[in-house]
Every structure is written in structure tokens, then in C-alpha cells.
Length: 106
Image 1 (cartoon, rainbow, N blue to C red):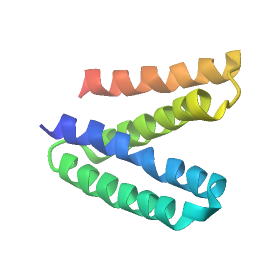
Image 2: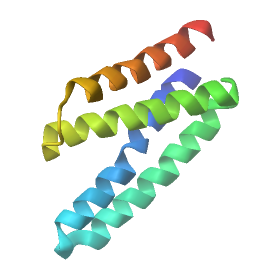
Image 3: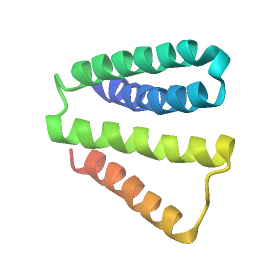
């Protein structure tokens, strides 16, 4: 169950940069999107806290930030037309390999 909490924590970790981006793009609703960012931060942190009860701190933190970082890059590419270059994808794949590797050796 801890791994599910950790994956969910990583997914919620994507919510705060997304909320900030949407707040910048939509000035009329910027307070709403900032609230989404703050709630995402809180939920993400709480789920990480729960996951760390059984998953080692370093492993949990690295996977949490990896999921959040990778997901944010993918959101940027899909919805905000961020650049897709060979090197960006190469280094993103290294992060993915690191996440999978940490899970495998846990």
C-alpha cells in the first residue's frame, strides 16, 4: 500500500507547478489555480509522509521527485508545447531508469 501512496504523492507533486502555470496563463482565475497548487503540495507531502513509514526515506524521496518531475515535463510537452529534443528525452529516460532501478532494489 505504501507504494501506491508514493505513486499518488508523485502524481500530486505535479499539481503545484501545473497550478502555478495555469495561474500565470489565466489571471482571472489565478487565485483558484494557486489554491490548487497549495492543496496539491499538501496532499503530496501527506502521502509522502505515509509512504515513508515503510519505504526508506531516500528511496521514497527520489521516486517522489522523479515521478513529479517526469510528469511535469510530460505535461509541459503535451499541453504547453514545451520543446521535445533528443537530449531532453535522453535525460528524462535516465530519470525513469533511476526510478525503476530504485524500486527494483528496494
